[in-house]
Amino acid sequence: MAVDVRDMLPHRFPFLMVDAFVSQRGDEFECVKNVSHGEPYFQGHFPSESVMPGVLMIEALAQAAAIGLQMREGDTMPEGAVGYLAGIDGARFRRKVVPGDRLRLTGTITRFRRGLCTVEAIALVGDEVAATATLSFVYAR
Image (tube, rainbow, N blue to C red; front, side, top):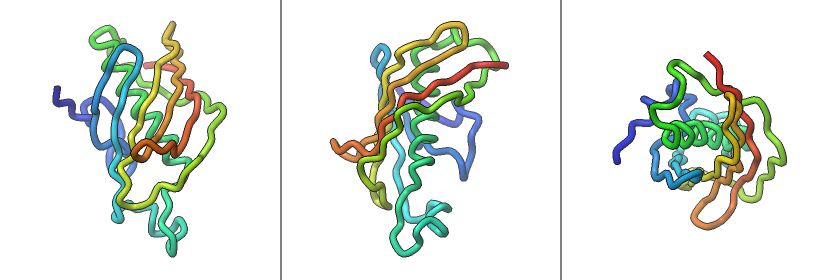
């Protein structure tokens, strides 16, 4: 199924951190971010050694989680509801992410009730874990 992530997220360049939706199976989802030399943050974040900032890995995971939730819930999502990141717990960064890496943004939706959502999120490069976090969202209009 072809999904345009721009139809699912309010974000646009340069802050759209998801390039493609890959899959949705029950509560699990996967999206990808292709990290390129042209990313605007590389100009000022360790210019002599380009490394994707950890906070942007978390943002990419949050955006992927929003897509995963919308794919899971389908038409039952409230019209006009926007997910706002409400919490980041246990964030850990295990591997540098550099230009040329394909960042797999995966997660499991562990809760979605009354506009509150919790996701166990993992960013991988190949099979290597780059970052993990428990993300919480609140959906509001």
